[in-house]
Image (cartoon, rainbow, N blue to C red; front, side):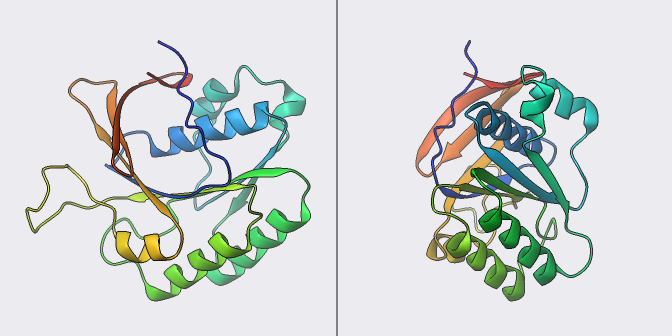
Length: 196
């Protein structure tokens, strides 16, 4: 099995995850790949990634390479956090990935205010940089799908320029199902990230 290549390049992605299935790990996997290509990563979240998990996914990078990972906190007002993120994304050289982990409440409707600011992120971040939003998915109460989760506000997010990705548990402990648009891929989560 080889390290999975997510093959992103300037994409706008909304990743909806089943709780505790590896959404943050997917973001860190992408971050390590982008840094390995000589680019910078901006990571914004309420809580920073687990330090042990971070070191597992970044173990193949040097200390100098790892310094291209810039973490920001969503604490305080969301609009100000977005302003700071956009300022960094447009002023720092060679930003290749912007990750917003747990950028909205874990259940219920995503507020119009948050969606407005997410549209700003899609439009104002450099076109060459991939944007990855990670949030909890929800269960489809209508019964129109057998999939374990759906992305909240998927239609609105698509209109705002985001691809919809979903991630949920597979048939055994380490197996995951990653759905990118209409394409479903079985992946396995390991200490170093995702393999296929």
